[in-house]
Image 1 (tube, rainbow, N blue to C red):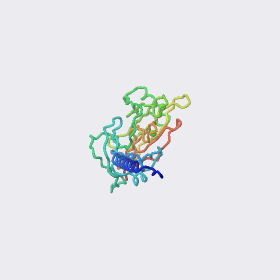
Image 2: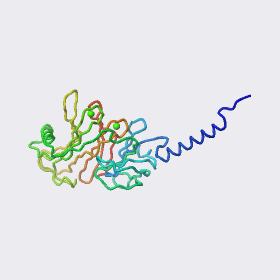
Image 3: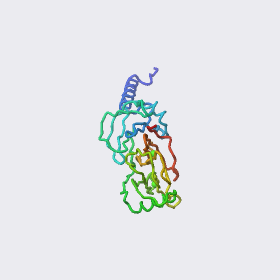
Image 4: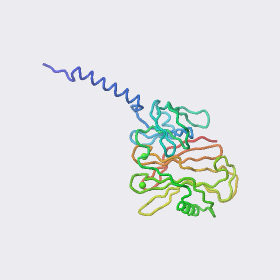
Length: 278
Ligand SMILES: [Ca+2]
Ligand SMILES: [Ca+2]
């Protein structure tokens, strides 16, 4: 007698399980073409996304492919506020930004992000140090002198220590800015020896080095719209257990945020970034 294979009962059960699994994954935000968008709540724009393979999509491609109902981790610099389902991303009419509506509202924090990642965004601890730390003030003075800032007024703003790639060696990220009214981000003039810099202190072939990630220097007073660079977050953006670095830039009538990775001890600019400005 000819045996029917698969048996009818298996076919029904199998079909039911497949449909149920598809529905569950879709409901939880894991679509058949999963991407992991990276959205800046502070800057109202989509930086891009990582794919299921851990590669990167720029903002335009991520915008086209981001489905609704993804689950986002909502964060503010060091603290994960919680999770929320997100809407489809839409274009803002002004300044090329994007809008992502989150179902759950969280209290606003500086440098707030929504990242559709099911993995830990901080696989290792990120420690905030006091900007008054004498060691890093002295180090920043040397870095500024090396950049050509004469008699710098050292004003360290942020210091974060972490092991970016999980090799057991700690890295330190430092931002320093000296500008008039710098909190406003609306300067149209700069004074003598104004600057803004973000650098990474890390070990290369057994030697400690300081790598400049972003900087802008003004040796003399002039009319200008100076950038204020700040560390906007340190997160594993693609689930490979290595943390990437987000840096924001604010200037007169504009702001943006972009990303770097540390690859083989070298900093690499990632194709992630977005902003709003004139
Ligand atoms: Ca490390
Ligand atoms: Ca990563």
